Length: 344
Image 1 (cartoon, helix red, strand yellow):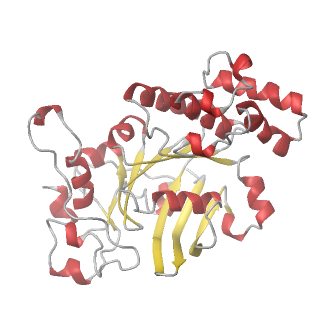
Image 2 (tube, helix red, strand yellow; image 1 turned 135 degrees about the vertical axis):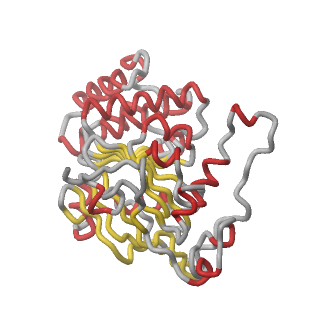
Image 3 (cartoon, one colour; image 1 turned 45 degrees about the horizontal axis):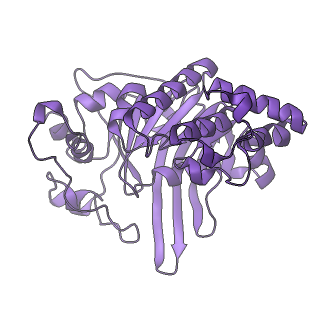
């Protein structure tokens, strides 16, 4: 299967007065049409920065893409000029931001903001664009869209604002959507509604979806594959059910063990010891070794390569992921002792 998006060895750094922070350090992944790739990791792992680099909305300065390639439908986005990149953004790929209230303009009605996509990219009149905005509000199931199209963002609930963000992303029926923490600050019931809506629309348009989150509960129900990031690097990739059943990296196991479970009622909740590293001074060797319960001498000196994980009972998936390091034999792990972890 041909990759819709193929990110290869992407590197991003932030140049500040205090030094250079390597926020993304050699990330590779790919997404096929109709596929959902979940990108997991703690805050500061590089998930959102990678997405911003893909979308071309990285604040520069201080952010700079220093290496790698981003192929979208076979075209290297990093070689496009500003206007060419702008025509791709919104029309062919779109992003749903995590804080809808901050992302939406408070002084413009939601109808104006939804209609802007059609006016700018399709050349529609203001009346035609407003009509399209109502259609979008109906599509994402916002009640009484025609009556509420002139309302402002603050007049909607958090869940309804997130639906407006989804409507904006879907306006021009893009081939790829990047959803950056789309259920943050929403209650569990609304989270489920938003994710069900995204899944339904994805099936309808056969879109590729990159879901950026730290919520493993959300991922389990919607993702096809998972890429786990730590300190600007991908440390494990796997089909979703394989990863939950048998993680092949200590960091992934720590994330899974920290999920509250009914069969552990009354026990203290597990937490990964320590803090993520300072990206201006990432430790030598494996960046996770100061927090890793399996760390040995080699972990402190030699950076582990991203190895292909094989073994009985693992999913074999060959497709778009082959080129980006997230497919092939179905799994990869950046751990010297992934075999020990896999069979733990």
